[in-house]
Length: 122
Length: 122
Image 1 (tube, helix red, strand yellow):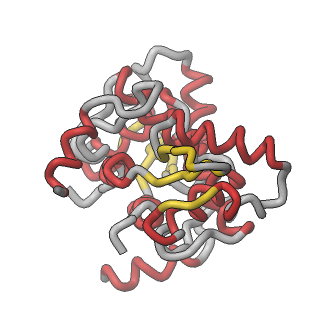
Image 2: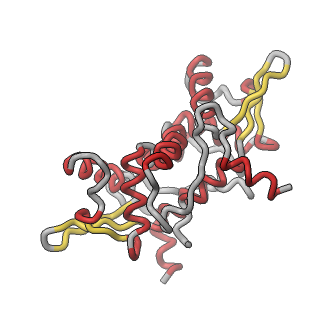
């Protein structure tokens, strides 16, 4: 099961093709295209409010949270929606509407691959 | 030696106090201050040219590179300098002048802590 989950990292599962791909930075330098794709993800996490929203989703049970549970970050609801869209466009979370609310879920293989890029131990 | 290197993570070793600090996002949500400090680092990596420069330094022997070795990223030398300053201000690299050239070195404990924040396995 876990092996099956590794493969989709190499395919686009987000709208913008922003998917990790690469060996740890310490092993080889990134190419132009890879750096563009990965920078999109780091940029998505490079805003304090977006990072807090992402951490609220990631730390929620099952790595999934209703938008109704993560709105208390000191910005307006439209701004929350805007930030969540950025996280989703970057491929870091997925979203699903259920009834009234939209639920956001972290994309563990994508996040793991992103962390792997930062692995300097190899 | 490696133990001694762990402690400075909690202290500011970069100019802007942008130092990792925190448990993995999956364990607990980030507070306001922590998210601001960590977002600075992700933002620094959230530009394709900067990310390439960082990968060039990280993949160089010993995780250190002369600025003269990493200028071939398709932008002007002043732009390279500007990006390297951003990486340094974020605490991801340190710099040292030796004779004519400035050498940049990755800050492994800082990068490891940043990767640790993205660890969803815990």
